[in-house]
Image (cartoon, rainbow, N blue to C red; front, top):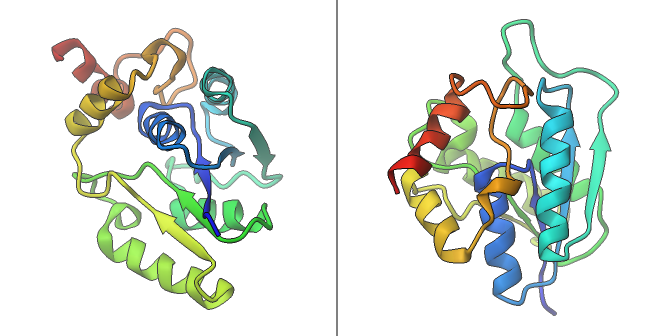
Length: 184
């Protein structure tokens, strides 16, 4: 049986590139956007809908009633929470939950150790029927942008500012990453 892919779609370049690649591969794909109280939730959701529509993929929105963002802007266990919520929202099995984490980040939940730990947890709950996919785990942001360009991702549909401002602030870490587009 073919594994269904559920992309954690933020509307940013990383997750949108995964969506584009999975659709191009002929995989059965759907997407989920999770609003966990992030400042950019509204603009990210708008971008996620545009990207999903462009690729003809159904995207669902899950809104968490509690704001998970601390006063310092951190979200304890964010990627683990997102992966587990995504897996819990669909009963399609076998399932691949795809997340756009990548190299060169200081956070535990963007490391190979994290993916091994979450994979073990998913295996425990699903007996191997749910897998975690992090195709950019060893890739830099420049590598992801190159992959996005090769896949034909319409960058103008994506959104990558952490503030939620429109237009983007061009100063937050996500906006600084996006400036790499200017150099390619």
